[in-house]
Length: 223
Image (cartoon, rainbow, N blue to C red; front, side, top):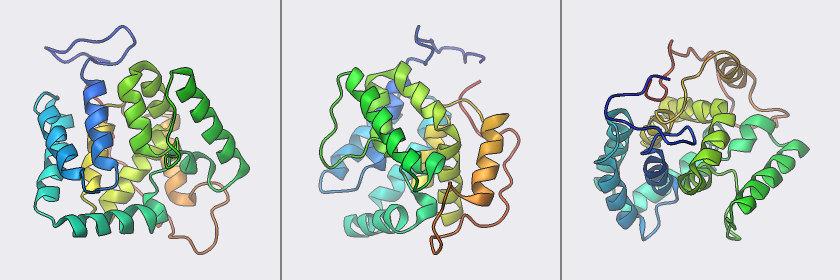
């Protein structure tokens, strides 16, 4: 990967600003509760110190959120992430669907967090993108590995949010800008997921719809 001028790379392979970006993205992907305004203000301050491809979409989301009534934003969040399977924020779903293997994937994530001293709350699932990003902010090397391992799912979520016209698509664009561009097996995995859906997808769920044409190259991290 080519390193942009003025940037430094950590010895763990992630750039020095990645943890701040992941923390800001995590704050904006959480449910917009009564404290969301404070998280939004913090994310804005962080964005001022991030590279433009990462900061710009965060600021676009922030502008939308600030112009939207809190109740309307919360209702849109529930409609987007809780009622539309295509916009599922739980990353193991893309790899395993509703199968027994997903339980194994969740357990492995919990073990990874525990090894770094992280204990999840009772109301947190380890594969929610906001949780994975928060963990990545505290353990960049391991977090980067986890996000890269779920790169196809992150990209498919971005595409689904784009198709839906969701403001949270901006946040996913920012996340993807911190990760390697899709290529090879990852690109094929996105096309396969878009066409077929996750393993053992149940009848009646919101379909993954028709052909998805990925731009070449797909938007990725700074190169």
